[in-house]
Length: 568
Ligand code: DGT
Ligand code: CA
Ligand code: CA
Ligand code: ZN
Image (cartoon, rainbow, N blue to C red):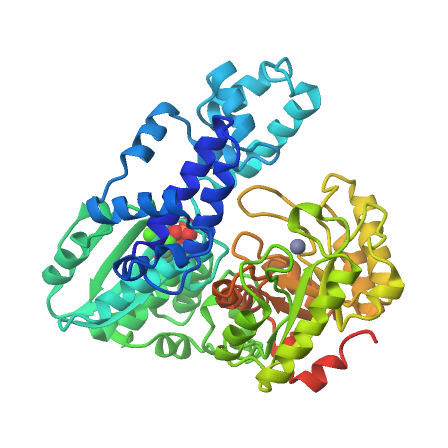
């Protein structure tokens, strides 16, 4: 499937055009890239049907470029653009406060091409002298470099997941392949992925390696041996494959799922029982004790089976020994998605389309939360527009019958914690989600106060993406989690795990702490198109990494019980 590959090219075109200070076009390319990235269907099929223009954001110019790329495997327009700006955009973009425009200025004025150049220039105070920068922004850049180094060379879970899934599906279809699974950080649902690890069992190792290294989405073969290989896909990510025998598949899956830290503890436990654990199995002397399944490996070490998402050496092996592991919330157990945007504000689909799509996902209810208040870039609705929207929701509710559409809003939390919509009007919504969309730079104390003030508002049911981080761009706001989570519990305000792949906010560690504090959580996709409703699994992944049981996640409840968890 070429979706990720094409989305990546369009994103890059958008960034490069923006670096060159071209107007409007970057937004168009970005919008198209976003839709293509989240398409459920193969874009090649859509192209064959000559329906590229039905993809939201794909106009004539972009349609032509996609067709050219699909037809010839090349896009000279893009190659030329890239040559004109030899800059490591992805790494530089991960510096908070730096976008393509400013990166363009830094390149033209100071020749900055990568993080090292940037660090050097900032330390030598070359940046503060530039027009539009100054001392403060130089300091900000220096602060952001460390964050950027953390993301360097990694990919969002949401980007890697469909790519890995497709390769695994492809492998499973081969008649000489028995089993195929992905392992590594991807199986643990970590928010970012260094590389994709795939395990296959087969009688014909050679044939598997041959097939794998010759797939059409392979850009480069990095290494090739008789039972393993590494490739770099055209979409940018590295994929490692290992071919094994069925009787040790479980041991290998356990080993290559990691984390390394979890495995270190597992090996110690084995040693303490006079056994030896490796990727080849669990051994007593030379005798294979367990290896066919992961369960066998764990059970033979006196442990309950540990779900992959928990394997981070944060107490899971002790819990497994004491039969005290949580009963993790399941991927299919969400009954309603509580944050999404339609055409009324900045989403791509109409009310009915999104309700239809949600019904296909077997949801019992959804909440439409178009933007309200002062967020003008996101097409906020005013009171009369909301009332029109409610009429439409009533009509769709009547027509659909099966799924219940709730009337919600995503309002903004001002710097002082006040919601930027009148209380009298907020009262009328079924659900109010309040989020931080501005003033990210307040102090820890200010932000703590800000969020507590918002939660004290009796109309605010849910705090959306509580830290407002962006994994690729922004650390998020600083707060005293103990105080904020304490206030959430006291006021009965629900905290969101936002499932957008670049947000995943609350993250795993914070969500775990919130649950420990006694807070209730919801998992919402914040979908801006029908396709993005499928991002729910990434939010559930975070919840599972946070050791969440379904009793902590209130949108696992049927509608009636769920409504009782709201403030009014
Ligand atoms: P990533 O790719 O950086 O997102 O993270 P992982 O966890 O996928 O790491 P990766 O791809 O280097 O290796 C996959 C798994 O293989 C890792 O989670 C645990 C196992 N593994 C790899 N190297 C070692 C090692 O040196 N020691 C141990 N104990 N396990 C290892
Ligand atoms: Ca990996
Ligand atoms: Ca690897
Ligand atoms: Zn938002």
